[in-house]
Length: 546
Image 1 (cartoon, rainbow, N blue to C red):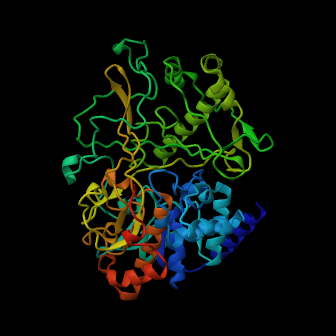
Image 2 (image 1 turned 90 degrees about the vertical axis):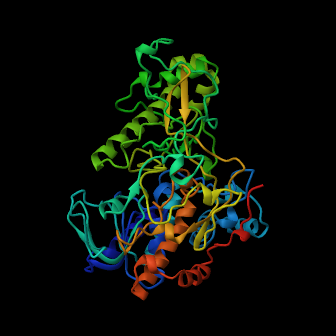
Image 3 (image 1 turned 180 degrees about the vertical axis):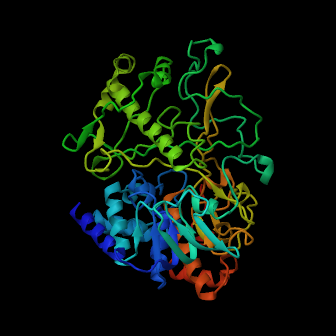
């Protein structure tokens, strides 16, 4: 902790009194892509500012996501695609845990060992803070883009200046939107989309409303009505009372968000689950009905260093709140805060309910006994009562450019060719269900797509990172890349964002050096820089799943 405080002071001193309000590059969003972009820009000798709307830099990995989604599935080994600045990050993680020798041995032997890639959030935040301080990168925390119409100023399709909510202004030659929400894109007038496109839009088969959702579907039949069997009585909480819709049709639904929660059994470090303000026991009726029907609810397991979890939600019934995030991407800051608070209260309440409720104890005593052993880790998220400050925004706005990544780029058979890859995204098209509705008189999760054997690793095109030239010529995004809903599921992984952030940093510097719109940066100039940074862009180097 003392080391992190020292790092914070160093970062603060790096920009306190920093008179230059004009930078070569301004990056909005301190996500994995944001800090990777900032480091890469600094390495190339450009001035750079990193703006983050919250108080913490690092995105999901500093908010509970300690699992790296690397070599954690038996069907494939995706670590060969973890390269460039992403591999540098995980080497720093290995150094922090004094396991570098084991880490390098694993890489040399081409062996899967997912535990060697995992970390605690507090460790990730310290690594990122130290890394940024090495380059003396000015970091502006609690600096959100203004919500007013004049938040972004443009001249001849170029952004000249952006303004924060407190009135500060930042100018640059190139801007990078590294947020997940895509707020800078939208404020700059860039075309974006939210939700699921119809399958017909790009000739896909996995987009839009799913005719059948089998992955993480209810394992038992759960009555959805307030009065069991009475469809006229309304539905219980967590269920949306709406029509199924036409299979393949598009909608504005988003895959569910959830907190990645750090828990521990360590008595010394454990804060027992507590009843949150606003707790409503009736919110958890579906969990009781699930147990009564013979369902088996999830329990935590320690997969991170020092006996901690990064408890996620990918089960048929968990703290994934399907359909409860629809207003988030386009909502103002107050609406987003409201949605975040609801998820927080619900999640805390669920853990309290499972670990203490007498009816849960009667229905599933072993379940309750296991949950009661766990609690929040006292040494994590110390500024937020040991609970993550931010939930996992899996999908928000996506840019719509002249080039769109679709299912056709991810499919194994006859994939659409990519002539300008900046990295390899090695992950299935992973989209969680978007809503919980009633189907055939029972609760039904709709929209989950994961795995299968139809997919291959995805070479991510540089063209997907730049907007239409008529809309803006000096803005890139490594996080809201131009892609369909289903294709984005293969991209939205933290280490992939690091690599895309690195590519955005390289492209931004080249755009400045060549005095070219970002759309016109020659790929032949980008490739040597990617190679120099040891970024893998050749599919032959990573292979395909079995």
